[in-house]
Length: 336
Image (cartoon, rainbow, N blue to C red; front, top):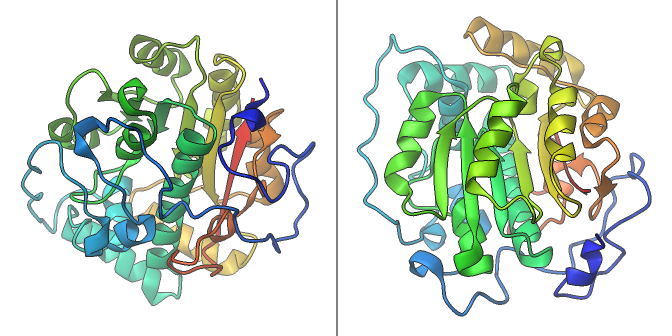
């Protein structure tokens, strides 16, 4: 399916190059500003209003949206609570919107920053990429079904995946959050209502179960945007993450999209490996990979936009935090 015909703004270049680009990071600015929506559906689900994605990531007041339900109370803090990858990421994001973390999770972030690893900048740049890519998939490509794998803990006031899907596709929007952590799923439940969006406890490595959940929530006759940001680098090679992603994308109709971000060691191998050691000592899995291994997750998919690039350079906006900084993370979007 030729998704380029569904663009609603004039591109500055073809959005479907014939191959993944080489390692040239000097991509021009995006032809549109995704942090300032140009249009919205006539009828907005839950009365959502346009937001600035960068402010939402930074926790600024312009990033607030109307919550579907009152937020749950913050998690209690404990020095003895086990570390969670979702809470560590939440702690690294920081700000008023991201405070559901334990002291042990905060300690991991402090240890990372103490060695010079940009944990907070990486988390915020990754989150900004996530929001830009979901906006691109829903607004520009017109996809109304989004499978968000490993979403982490929900923001309390800022935008999230289902808010963006509802903003641009209205009542047709369907969002499924899939996570292995039952606490993450439980934290999402109070925010979700109705048949448009729900959370399910399932594992990316159990593709049959994940696809069954997707089949129950989506109409798989239509394309799906699969969002796997900051999740595949938590899966060891022995669990065959490349095979899992290939099975998921092969089960979806043409026109489906894969949004992916992944930790890489290429910019500074000693620093990234030292950061991985800290994460492993905390009981977390971390598998930084090189460019070729990350690009292999896309398989035969066609690159959208600039291809696989550092996350801060994928269709950046002038308001993005830590723009073009080194955050040791590649990001890209591919279409079937």
